[in-house]
Every structure is written in C-alpha cells, then in structure tokens.
Length: 69
Image (cartoon, rainbow, N blue to C red):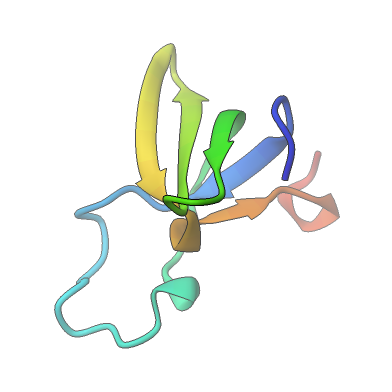
C-alpha cells in the first residue's frame, strides 16, 4: 500500500477483538484514503469522514473492484 491509495478498514471496537484469533478476518466496512503506512510499527493513518484514524495494519486492505470503485 502506498500513500494516496483507497483502502477499506475496520475500526477498533466494531468487532470482538478478545474472541477473534484472526484479526485479518475482521469485517472491513469503511472506505478511506491512506495517508501514512508505518511498516515498522505495522500501523496505518487513514483519512475517513474528515478525520484521521490510526489503525493496526492487520485491519487495513487496499480497496478494489469488489468495493465498487
């Protein structure tokens, strides 16, 4: 993923992180623009609805055709 990519992501608290053993499978219902991706810390900063959100990299995927973009 590169800065400026359109990504889909899950927000912290919208899924049961205590019971889930695979965070990659969390439903990613939000679409935003990737502002920064920190490969060392495995985190992403995403612009969504005019606000910046910092989320774990496991909760972010590059958006594609199935997102109707």
